[in-house]
Length: 207
Image: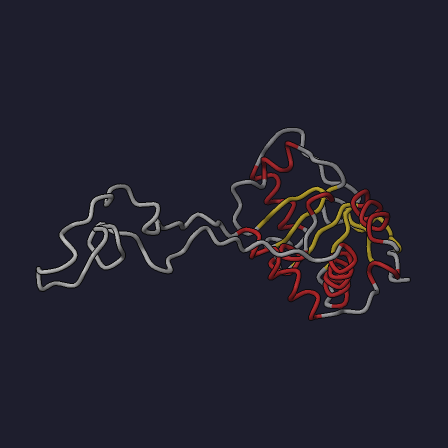
């Protein structure tokens, strides 16, 4: 069972905390990390681009000129793709990029990401993370003392003061346990967990 120091917001060690083998000492499966990150980024993509085919473009109901005798190629509508103002052939038409993965795969990837941070000594556990009021400077000072100025902070329950304090800091991000995801764990070089968050993560990811 892995054991890590338990710190407070002043970066003082209060003791040690035991982490679950099942969650923080899992097999690191890089292919699952790749699949889940790809799924997350794909699901963020918008399916907005849509072009009109000749059936969607308004107008063009009348035949532009007679079928024979003009010396030109026969045409039935000015909204065909070869005419200016006509439809678009084979253009984008609201393609959806959504991907899905099984819940077991997503959970295994989360365990791999958490284990990776622990193995690389990039995991910090604090007893709690609270602020009396939203203050970016105070939160940044806490992150600096913890040597986590580029880090993902995971807290047990949503705390408006903490989340607002980190909102304008580009290199820091705060999420509740419900928002824990593989992409953000891998994006930030350090991972900071509160003790209540550790309990909820273990309860969520244990088989």
